[in-house]
Image (cartoon, rainbow, N blue to C red; front, side, top):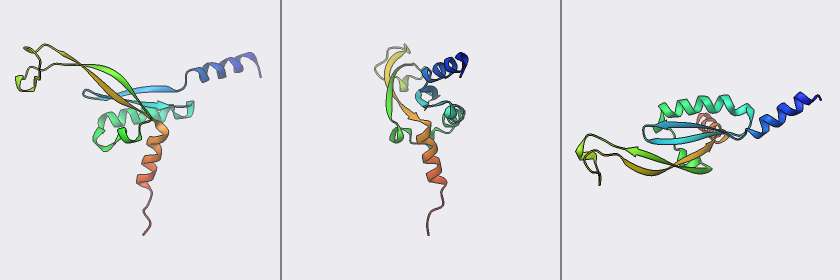
Amino acid sequence: MDRFTLLSKRKIKDTFPLDFYGEDGSWRFIIRAEHPGEVLDAMYWRAYISCHRKEFDLLHIATGKFNYKYNYSTADTSELHFGTGGSPMRINMMGPIVPISAILAKVAEQSAPKPA
């Protein structure tokens, strides 16, 4: 092996796991690729789940969580809770971290034919 091959392998290894952030409104999540072979799947499923959020129960297949702050504001006074006159509120929220392998396993499980 030459020096370039060794350097490239070391560089790639240091970047994983690689997280892809998705969101649906104020709800955020991470799809995690553990190795280079999972990157394209993670990118695809991050986009798909962002558009079809109600089809997935990410909380039950998550392996971790991350914290983030969400700035909530609305002009509709019926939706303001403890806010003052439309000023934004910072809300601490948690999102699930889901490895792509768990999503692929769940999809394979759902698409497998059920025994009669």
